[in-house]
Image (cartoon, rainbow, N blue to C red; front, side):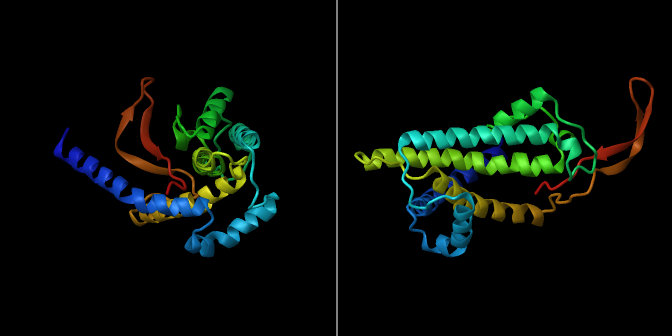
Length: 233
């Protein structure tokens, strides 16, 4: 391993350990409903989500209801991501007129992102429309992670409460994971990426003229290169 690699690894470990205590304490207050700062900033939006979804903030689910909510939510996530991929050619935010994703790739991608493994077997910018990238893949980057965080919180409650019948509400844990933890972190990182010049556009691909045109295997001369862009940051 190079000295640069060792430096990056050391920096990563230091940051991870350094953030563990304050971030963990903050998350504990969030899931207990005791984060005063978070409630002031995100509370109105949280309550709006509950009203729109018909969720009670004080609901206490049994483990069966909690598990059922997790399964139903993630199955619906797979379905939505699959449908968006299959019909992206007929939907907006597709400036490069990309066609529908094949059934096998669409199903593989939907299950992968819903389980938060995010395994990809395609070139994202040349396969997925901007709508699919944002409304399907990016949304799953948040809610699938939040779903896993909610399950972990329920497991912790199961150990801590011992004789209690309920594990909390999956919908509340999911909402708080997204609003109070994932969105703030993502916002900071997105602004950092934009400040460093990462692409952020709804325009179609850019075209670069090659300084040294080349011939393909069938002797066709290639003088241009299409550069995929999009709302990357």
